[in-house]
Amino acid sequence: MNPVAFEVFGIGIRWYGILIAAAMLIGSVYTIREGKKLGYSEDHLLDLILVVLVSAIVGARLWYVAFNLSYYLSDPSEIINLRGGGLAIHGGVVFGIIAGYFVTRWRRLDFFKMADVIAPVLALGQAIGRWGNFANQEAHGGPTALPWGIMIDGVKVHPTFLYESLWNLALFAFLMTYKKRKPFDGALMFLYLIVYSVGRFWIEGLRTDSLMVGPFRTAQVTSLIMIAVGAAAWRWRSNRSKS
Image (cartoon, helix red, strand yellow):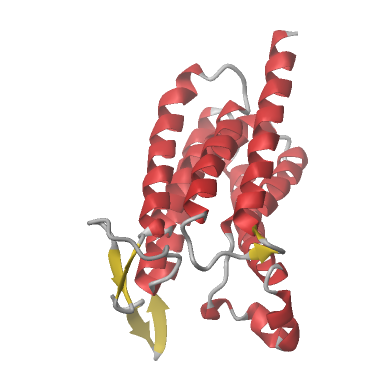
């Protein structure tokens, strides 16, 4: 598959960028709609969306650069070359949550209510965005004889992008179903952190292009931390809601 969908004035527009933009648009429309139901103004919601999206992109890039530091220190100009690839979703999630916390305080929005609005479409956006990896022929696993393997450079490999896309799609469906009976505000975001991270830990073990921190896969270490944070936050909020 050609990673370039079409060209505009000689500049290639990649499927990866189109899919990420589509995911952001869907998430933004949903966030505004649900935020209005909570009584928040569209202007304040747009502030939240803009800052979170920009922070997520910057965070995803910085995360990737941080764990490929020797390469980027040898050629610092490549740090801002997003067209050359290199975004790490964990950095986007971490920076996006931090930015969201400060914007909600600034605009007097309820952080946990808005986190629950964003959590399901965050999972959906990741499900959509992973297909950009298919277009780029990247983020795949090692060799496999399974019938659903895909051919990359003449070798049948695990389609780990597909595994994660399906996992995130199932997580989206679960969160959308569970939101009507969530026990407290923040529950959907905490469940997202736990469930997404469980799947990512397993899937990352199949990949051949993992970022590394010493002998460990960065995404697996981060997933374990997110599971612990999500579980601890769940217990904290649950205890507060009962008191």
